[in-house]
Image 1 (cartoon, rainbow, N blue to C red):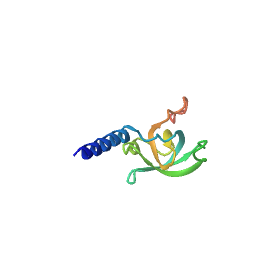
Image 2: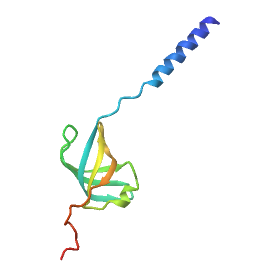
Image 3: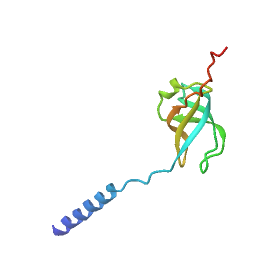
Image 4: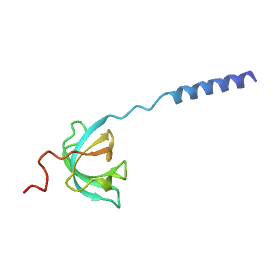
Length: 109
């Protein structure tokens, strides 16, 4: 019975150590781009992104979104910022529509 108790104790301690270790966080990058196409049905955005040093060159690509509500907020032509992560080339996280520059109103005459 003593061996079973020791084994149980070792297994319990091992499990606690393993559970206490968090997975290493992936490196994040700031993403800037211009929305070209919004596909509400697929919940994707086609975006021409600026070069992201150490992650990806400038290109147009279709991305999934982490928050489906964003596809109802953004429009083609909007400048956006987002967060992207090492090893994940298909998802945009924390998407924000960048404010339009002052004087960029279509109501100018």
